Length: 602
Image (tube, rainbow, N blue to C red; front, side, top):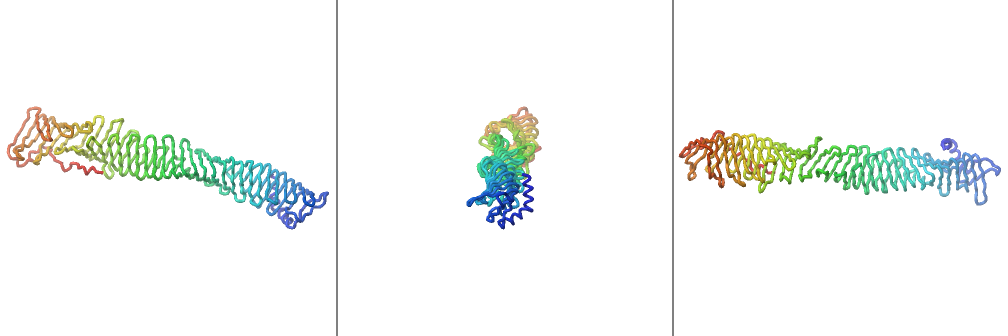
């Protein structure tokens, strides 16, 4: 084979031009034999050899060529060790056979049959088609001289730069650098293996066109599809028709996938879905970064796992770290039934979920809705932190036949098992149908159903105002059962005539019956001012000091008053000109600061 390469090179620059000239004048160069000199001016083929023998009759001619055989026609050159030519049209060549066509196509074989009329060649043995870096190896093939196409059915291997293609049968258009392969087709390169039963191949552009069920395997993925292409130069491809991609336990389904190898990126369109164990992602378009394990879900994005369902316009999800970020109207529903909505959701590296802008959290099990600008949550411990950005967070809790509203600068909400807890900090305000108030801080625990207000708390119930260092509200069946004021307790009761009955002490306890105030008990260092009326006019005022007192209500009016020890009373009888002069020290009626329902609207 190598001697013919040297011969092809030598003949192409020196001998072949001479052969062409001789063939033009119909002269065949041959050695003399005992049959005499061969001279055939009507020859269709140019023949040249070390030994030449001519036989024939009126209808058939036979030429035998041995040693350095060269047969030419136009730009077609055939070389062999020996050849047999019939009627200058049909050629049988043997021994180190090679063909040179044009300036780029080289063909090698052990033997061949050539028909000059059909312009077709049958090649046998070790058959090689070569053009530049492209090389097709087979054991039997047919070659169409005019169309420069090779046909084979006994299997072949095509080598093209980094690609190795194995197939049972095929058509190789050498001039156009195009091929069609059938049967068992395998394409290998340094990073992938493709298997199919039919394939089109553009050799110059290094693109395979998928036209049948095809499997592609890489180091990390398996792809099945029935249509598309793969560009080996760019390491890019497009796959469609019954598409499925397996990446470990991850399964990707879509109508179409564009693969960009340099970025290890898949662009999925047409109802794309990514499944992995208990995870699923869907969107109008999904971009999957294989190496980074990141999903970009674009348009009607949806992601779910065993803990939550996440919806948004756009979701960016890191499957390695479980971090995510959304934009557009977003919603998370966790496995406890809580729903979180916002314009932006994301998870920090420490596992904390953050919601921003128009945040709404609903917990149907706890009958709670939380509104805010910024909300942080820890799904592992069921903790939520809402804080003031442009507007105070608002908590709304549905009670039995009532609603509890709570606002503050910072709100912490958590739940462990069935016990819920929340903490309000700075500028706390709350409202219920029968009670409202303000304070600096608030804590609540469902374990003992107690609200604890500190830092200058102040309460209002109808015409009653209560202040103290600490105020406790004890709930029972979603209703207030009792309220306890501890430290500097001060109760002010406004009468219809505009005066204020007042009582203060170390501790004030208010007990409720249903929604109505039933009993008040005041303990230690008690001081009381009580105005007496007759026909809506003040006829006196009673100022009393004692160790404790108790009074009960009927229809919001005091109907019974009892002192725990002997009181010291000072009764001023007659018309009271200046009721304010009888106010107890620390008196501060702040009804104008009382929270209104409209301030809790959302």
